[in-house]
Each structure stands twice: as C-alpha cells, then as structure tokens.
Length: 328
Image (tube, rainbow, N blue to C red; front, side, top):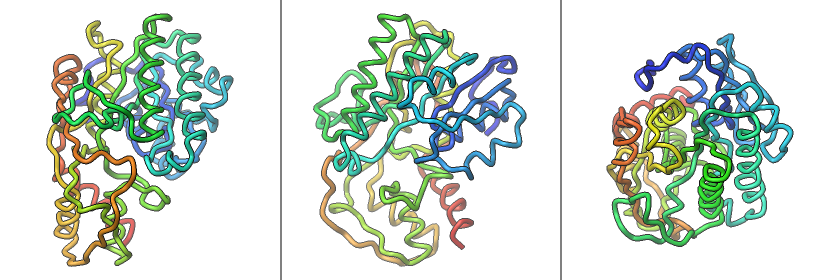
C-alpha cells in the first residue's frame, strides 16, 4: 500500500485506531504509519485482536498501544487525549454469535461506541469515522443496496450497527462532531482470523482446502456477496478521516466493489487457486443471513473520491497466498 489514498501531509497529525490489533484496524494503522503519521495510537483489548498483528506496527516510532476496553469510559477518554482523527473499528462481529450473546454485543458495540463518541467530543477530535455494516439493510430486498433504503434488522449484530448510525447522527447534530460511517460489505484479506468459532468464510475455505478439514457451505451456496478486499476499506477510512468536503460529513457510505459473486463461485475459485478437488459439505441455511448482497458505491465515489483499487479475484489471489504461507 503506497500513499495513493491521500494527498494531505499527515506528518504532524495524531490518529487513534480502535480495534487496531484486529483485521481491518491493523491495516488502517499500518497505512498511516507507513505514510508518516506523527502518531498512531491503537486501542484494543485483544479479544478479537492479536499481538501478531501489532508486530507489523512496532517497527515504527510513531506507534503507541493501549490495551483496554471501549466499555470503559475512562479508557476511551485516555485513548482520545491529544488525538486529531479517530478510526473506530473496535466491535464484536458475527451474526450467529450475536444471536447467542445479544447483551454482550450491545454492551460492546453500542455502549462502547457511545463512550467513544463522547470521548471524541470531549477531546475535540477533528473527524471521526466508524465501521458500520451491510447487515443494516436487513430484509430490504432492493439490489443494489442504496444507503437511504434499509429494512428491518435480522440479527442483534445488525441492530447494534443500526444503533451506531443513529447515535452518530445525534452526536453530529447535537455536539457538532464530524462523523462518517462505513457500511462494510464482506471485507476480506490478509490477517483475517481463520481459527475462531465464528471465522469468516474466505479464511475458513482456504484453511479447510489446504488442511483437508471439513468445509461447510450454508444453504445451497447460491447466496451472493459483494466481497470487498481490505485495501478498499483502508482507502475509505483514510479518505473519510482526511476529507475537507463539507458535503461528505455526517453521512453513511457503502464500502464495497459493486460486484457480487455466489458462495459456490467463491469456493470453486479457492479450489482452482489451490489446485484442489476437495469438496465442501452443504448444510442448513444460517439464521439472520441476507440472501443477496450488492452495493451501490456511487455516494462514496462522489463525495469521498473512493475508487476500489482491487477487485474480488485480485484480492482473493493475494489472500490465498497469505494463508498458503501460514498453512503449508
């Protein structure tokens, strides 16, 4: 990743990335450090984040780490002290897990989010960007998904992300915080965790094929997703934090490529890359899942100059290479 995502001088600016030991957060923090940010502070409780993801950041003199939890308001205040820009990625993911643990999801994703917004206001943060989710679209059937048309939430996880968007709007209106939300569509790439009970589909597929472990496809596998390589999520966070476009503030943006592929196509492509004929096992569809997903990304293009730099196939090739090294 070069500095193709920004033109501003960031050498005198301090950034906070919450969840910066996690998958997306560590990529955002790394981009900022590589491109000469004065300070990049990471706040993470290492529940979903990993020390090994911080290893890539520790070579930079501007890197700072606070091990702490966004559920603690004082920790959030400490993390925002002296910071110019915040990229808030800390959250619990996973639709199935949220169905099992709705109270925990609310405490972290909603309570923690409000703590961060309040700390941002108190510490006069210039701009605050945060991770929302395509799950907010719920049962709204229209494709492609357009930001102002959302349906009923299908899971506690989706409800927490919808609540984030409501709180962000209130903090913009009441406290004047400049805030931008990003509805991620199936972000994937290097450092995504393949080992948790609720691991994402791409690392699970690749690990299963390489190690010949059972791989499961939910339903008939014809459900479609707008699979989005992690560099594209990094790009939109950088552009969102640094934009001067007044029209861009206090809005929510789809972050995707604008193409969708079926889970079956994804699995077959993984097999081809890995030169394997290892078959998947089909099982019951998963509760709370959206059938088809495809984003309209024109708002992010128009207001933030967002332009996906990696399509699905190119990103998948890079991701598979990363996991091949890990597992072979």
